[in-house]
Length: 422
Image 1 (cartoon, rainbow, N blue to C red):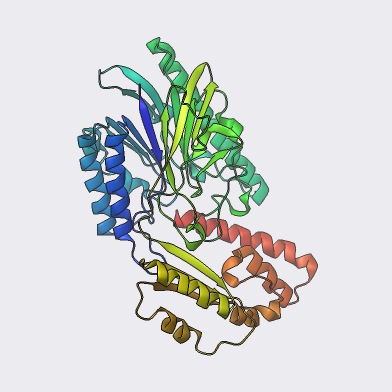
Image 2: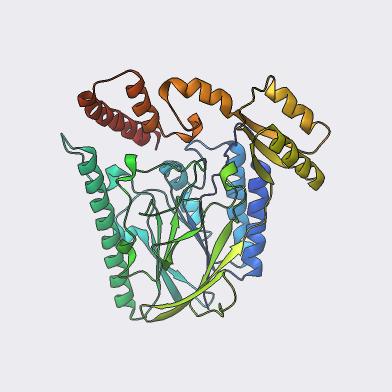
């Protein structure tokens, strides 16, 4: 029985408001190596955003390569890695030749369909699964820009290009299976934003097409694939009530909004599981095949907590954290109406002599005073760039007939900036 582990969005090298997190990532990778052994995993799928930036730190690179060097000792036969929108395709692809000797298959950027379809074998040397390793598809990979395109046309053409790419890869996988004459399962990978996907305010997830117009419908995966291992969204979730289309989510909290979220990896096998009394287990029959999936919880390697309220609530919550006697990272958001002079100094006094560490402090009373001229009802950090732009147009009393054109120009500028960053 072939067992597959699906993970994604490691974001090695990521900072949290300037605070380094290398210790967390090292702890996760050590846990993952041990999990590969205990679960007897044969295939590891990593669905993009291995690194947090296109120029990862030396420490992040060392963690990545040390992990890959040790995977072979766990009994895991294959590792398949696809690039995400945060990854540099050229950086991921550079050591392909060396890594392929270790059965580490890397697809950093879009290729011809035949080159994205991998036939993997089991311990007996027999073909056991076909993996369609589709990386993050940049606009230039799936469409040609047209002069005079509106944002809606641009997004629609991008969606059409993504669908066409997956259809071509699926056709290649079916042809490969037919040539073998063996009914092998077909697993797809992707790093995309699907319609209805859940995100959080501070998780760092960026719309791949500005405004969300380029989100992909989950039915693109319905016809051929037995399972779809997705990356990009950090909240573990299935897509469109399809248990076979799933985001594994990030392995550690990317922001304080995720602090209370249970992180997990997906363990897939091609047989039914006894899931009657276990909300973390799923079984289904699809395309004539019994399948089962378990969500394996990931330990918390760095406790984090968001405290939001007036001063009395903040004092009470900090006292509870102190009583826990753990090295908790804190985000404190003051929402009271009373003016708090020297708020940071008062918070530091609360934390003095404890294991608690203040990572971020926000005074919403002050933010409300700053944003009052724009009649904002949210903290600045909770507003999208488009919302800020719209508020500024209103504050500057821009004529209503001019706002639509200005907003369209601003969206186009954001899209160009996002593509340059990718």
